[in-house]
Image (cartoon, rainbow, N blue to C red; front, side):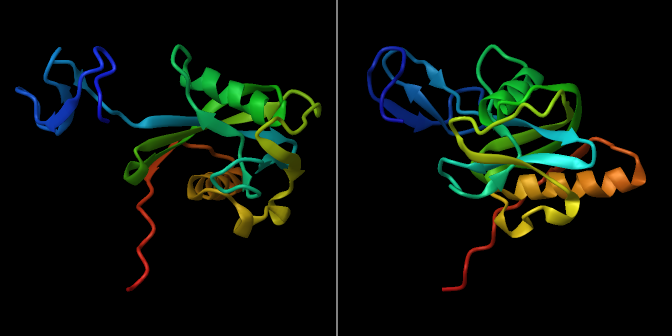
Length: 182
C-alpha cells in the first residue's frame, strides 16, 4: 500500500500506539489501514453418493477441479457466500447447508469454509468461472487434478466421515508447501 484510501496522501508502515503489529498509517489524516484475511466460502454439493466438482476456467489453477467456492463479499453471511458461489460457479441450487470444514491458510492470509449441502436438482451447468461441472463418485475423484489442498482435505474428510455416518465440524491449518532445495 502506498497511499491512503481516505485522503490520498502517502502512508508509512509502523506500529501504531496501542497496537502490536506493523500497519500502514497515514501521517496526514492518521487513518490506520488494517489488512485482514480473506474468507473463501463454498460447498460440498451432494447428489446421492456423488459430489459436484467444477473445472476452473480462471487462474489460479486454471483447468484443475475444485469444489464451488470463492471469496466472501461484504454484506453477506458465510453461508450466503457459499450458496452464491455454488450458483455462480456451477449454476446449482443447494439446501440444508451444514458447516463442515474451516481451514486456516495463514501463509496466504485466507480462511476456507466449506458447508455440506444437498443439490436441489440436477439442473447445474458451468458458470463463467468454470469450464465444466460434473458429479463424481468417490472412486472417480481426480485427486491429482484438484486445484487446492483445502479442497482435497475437505473431500478426504467427507468420504471418510460418510463411511462413519458422522460429520463433525473439522478445523485445521494448512502449512505452506515446503520450498525446494537450492
